[in-house]
Length: 170
Image 1 (cartoon, helix red, strand yellow):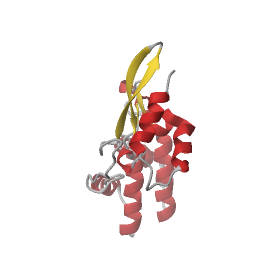
Image 2 (cartoon, one colour):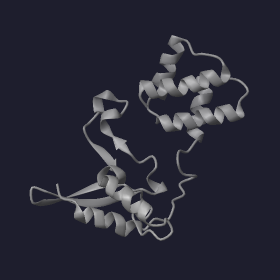
Image 3 (cartoon, one colour):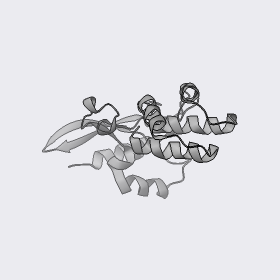
Image 4 (cartoon, helix red, strand yellow):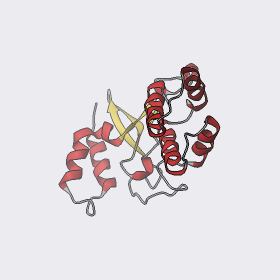
């Protein structure tokens, strides 16, 4: 989680309980929470607001973060013919006459939380240029146009994405 994401989510917590963290507390909280995703922190804040009359301590917040599971309930996967429940899709691009295989996240629920951007990880020493695009980033408006053309019940997602992938040349 970035400092900005932490500040935004912490502000929600502070406004709900009408009690702000001072500068030192905020630094300590960020150091302890920076390795968690912003989504997980946000879910923990929501849980705190639902269950606690008083603003949680750092220790209590860490306990809540350990309890929350982002995006899916206890590892449940939705049935998806496109990614077979993994949340990832392999596709080919032809660059300079050579085919290359890439991976992107699916458009189904299984892909939620699987996005990766190595340039944004908290540990500065291990940042990288590697990232995983979403199917919407890879296939763009072509995917969105095809989705709106057919009814969701009739749409064959696997064929839709496969056809778009076959048409791609860069």
